[in-house]
Length: 105
Image (cartoon, rainbow, N blue to C red; front, top):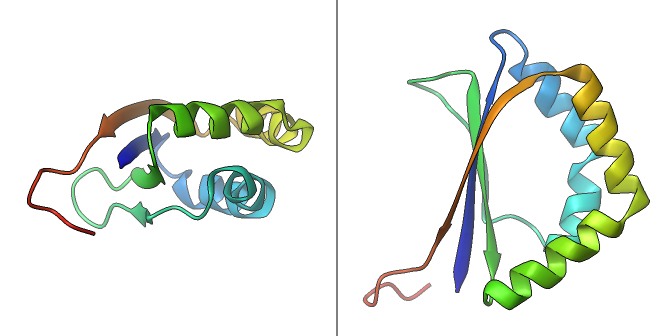
């Protein structure tokens, strides 16, 4: 199992707008290619301008194949353009993680 943990930070005051834009234009497309995320969460304390989501893959090869298919989807390219034009995001941090030996999902 490979977990892709992604944390994004939005410009102050724009996180609700960004998440609404993603809900309308990106979530269905991304889920169609990657499957449903394990989690999609907004920060409650700390940096309230950030959110994270976690995607689960069988392996690095599974992740690569699914992400390549997503990148080839014209609807995803349209969403990326809309998101870039909105300019709500200021940073992104990705971590690929594997479960420890004693964890059994």
